[in-house]
Length: 220
Image 1 (cartoon, rainbow, N blue to C red):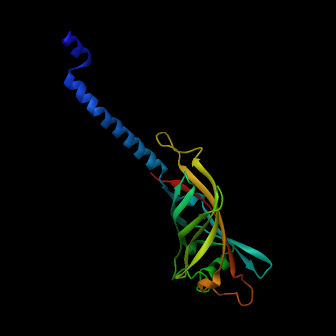
Image 2 (tube, helix red, strand yellow):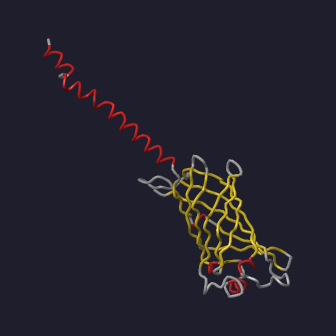
Image 3 (cartoon, rainbow, N blue to C red):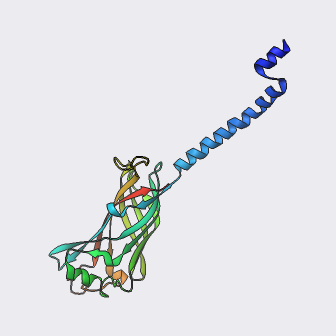
C-alpha cells in the first residue's frame, strides 16, 4: 500500500522538497513578472527620425511679411514614459549650414558672421533642463539653446500628437517602428545670442518664432 502511494505521489522526502521549493518558485516568478512590468513602464529612449522631422522658423522681413525657413539636418533623442506621458532628457543638434529659406543669396548671407556664422559655429544645440505638464497631452519644456557660443534658456509649448506602432514597414522578420510624434512652438530674441544684424533699423526681425514637428523612433 505504501509503495503504491509513493509511486502515485512520490516519497515523503520528495513531497517535502516540492513543498519547500514551491514558495521560492512562486516568488521567483512574481519577481520576474514585476521586473518585466517595471522595464515596460520605465521611460524609453527615442531617437529623432530626421526623415519625419522639421525644425522651422519665422522672422519678420521689413515688417511686410515673415520669412519662413528651416534646417535640413537635425539629430537628437529624448526619453518618453508612456504611462505618465512625460518627456525627459531631450537633446537636439542642428547643423547650422543646413539652413534653407528658398532664396540662395539669403541662405548664403545667413551662413555668414552677421547671422549663424556657420564656419566658426557649425552646430547649435538644445538640451532640456525642466518640463511641466499643462494637460493630458500638453506641456512646457525648457532647455538651454546654444547658438554662436552663447547659451540661454528657451521655453517651448509642446503637444504630444500620437504614440504607437507605425501602420506599415518592418519587413518580413521585423516589427514596424514604435513612434512618438509631437509638435512644439516657441519664441526667442536672437539679439540675446549676439545676432544683431538688421535689428536696429527693423529690416530683419529680432523675434524668432520656432516651429518644430518631429517623430521619434523607440529604441530597443
